[in-house]
Image (cartoon, rainbow, N blue to C red; front, side, top):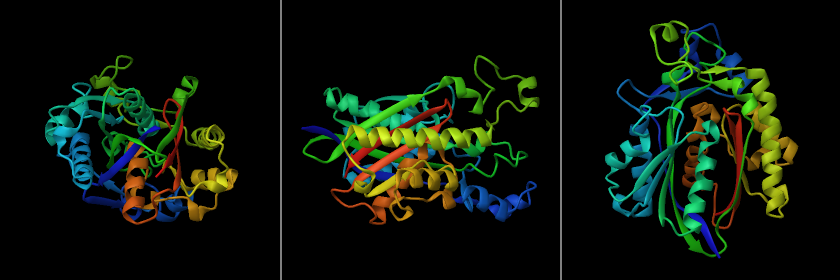
Length: 326
């Protein structure tokens, strides 16, 4: 049976680290308040000269190195991001050039924090149909560039980073068992960035109104996140005739520790079997899961044959899940 398998992972984080104590000097907040409500202690921040494609290229090169592959062997580059270098060309095109993947098709996808799992589903379809053999999937974000540092309710949440995986079809029992994608566009107003598109084109007035920053209804987003993640996980388990007790590691989107804890509790998965790195990186949107995945692999938390359950939620609202046998 042909399954889409992750043959290598990679990640990259900007050098600059912004701690909660740094934020105390910037906005009316405290380390205790941030930790208690989110679980975040620090986050990485891209420099003025770093764009999303720069972070994504570094993560991609590290994944290629681990796979022992040349960039020319990549057939397709998918980049999940909501902070592209620019509207067009796509960030994937810039990365294709930066890493020298001259034989690869390339495009971006926008599903906010669910983007990486959406990308897994797209890549899986291409591989199963034989359209492409080697696919580079990247989740990369520079969310701090669209963060309002005067808004204490949002500026404490986000960080920058990139994670990458190389996917290839393989006969056997290891690989991507299923993906499950969802959306409810009626909830778009809970988490969005209103300025810059055709609805609110960039102008002096849009800048004055702060329309180019992330807007979020935190309380409602929290409720939807817990409910949607639980649903996505149950659907994934049911589809594969699995019980939560069989999952070796749950890798959720890293947005809020209380959300992660609530979902794990509802699923009956102890926190020892949940991968959490939120405290070091904050919410990195589409980069969140591939960053965690790479870190878990490198630290030995994932072993051959392990069953992984991935889940995410984000603006749209979108949510998604995936089951992988490593």
